[in-house]
Image 1 (cartoon, rainbow, N blue to C red):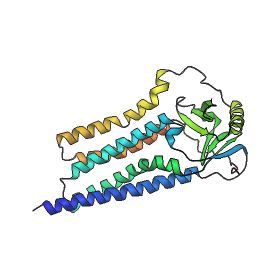
Image 2 (tube, helix red, strand yellow):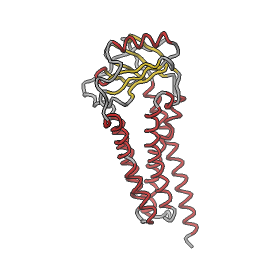
Image 3 (cartoon, one colour):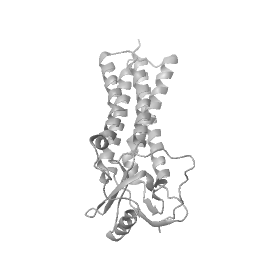
Image 4 (tube, rainbow, N blue to C red):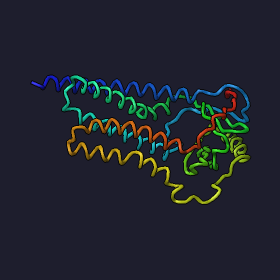
Length: 272
């Protein structure tokens, strides 16, 4: 007698999941468009554009960490859907479950679209000013940067975080060695070409460990609850997804120190 209600619930949950993933994907795509839009104004010592590329082309470690965060969210979503397959859609319980699925799916849709938005939203505008590096709408004062590295073979520059010296905060692959040489000359005036001191084990791997702590334990508990068949496992998965989403964002933000309220980005001219 409950089979039709069961089928309806499963179909409804799948529809909500697809809708949520699409909404999250649109939000992630638009967010990438906003952050990559160039700042208007003047003051750039050097400004250039580069075509959008897959994120792992310039920062494979950072891309792997973003993927790890996304996979943790998707596993929790899958566990929640599995836990809800025996839950008929009716009454208050069904409404709460539906809301949880929609919210979790939106959060999972944002990282799902990240690599594709990175590849296809462009061109990417970058600039160097007297006081900062600029990437789209992101302004990085020299104080938040540790050192830089030039890869002449790949025509690439990588700038590392002063807060986490093993983490990229700015990287660019140039179309010609002339522009790369200009950028390297300007960077040399503000940053060192190597870390100020030898990086310890925690400085090299602390960022990775933080992200693992923000994801793996929550996924592990979700898997255990699912294996035990705990009735409220779906509710845990929903809450854990939100927590992992927020904690992961906080970990990624640790690459940079918090901006002071009075800090304003320096206007930068658009590259021709």
